[in-house]
Picture 1: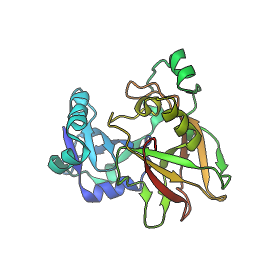
Picture 2 (picture 1 turned 60 degrees about the horizontal axis):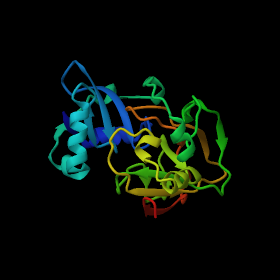
Picture 3 (picture 1 turned 135 degrees about the horizontal axis):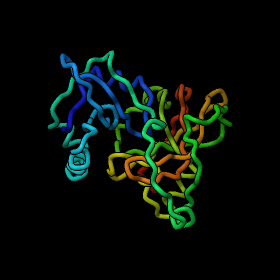
Picture 4 (picture 1 turned 45 degrees about the vertical axis):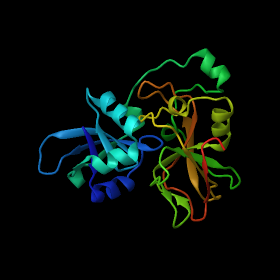
Length: 232
């Protein structure tokens, strides 16, 4: 099924790390029920059961759009204490990255995602880009102009390689929703901000191979500085 996450639970998810850029895979108990549900949650608000009907329901969202489905989805309340975000490393999916994609689309190989890599301090002059299907991406703290903790981005260089080579960002960054990526949020972390870099690993039958950066603690105030349409 497709659900709208109860507002309090959505706020709880916003305080927890992402599984990948723009989504979380969540294991949780439904309120007043005993059995666990496994969900893919987009932008902390819209969720799909990760079951045999997942692709059917995902395609409904693609056809009708995120906002339309959010407006008519059944509200889902979770037992807040039971909510657990599943890291990307637990997905253990393997999809071969073809040589054509490596060369034509400037994709990268490697078995370490960002959360598996060492932490480093930002240089203070490098830009990172968060790609999103959602104009109101909840990982962007607009009031304080920063990236919220536990969030993923890519580098500006990899983003430019993606659209200049006409690559598919959904496949490159192994995203679950297949919605068109419409927005690019630019962040320039300060010297005291830490990040981890890695290669996007396969997931949701996508090959990955883009560069990802993970900000466990988010970024400092006044580091988010620009929102643009994808590819502009």
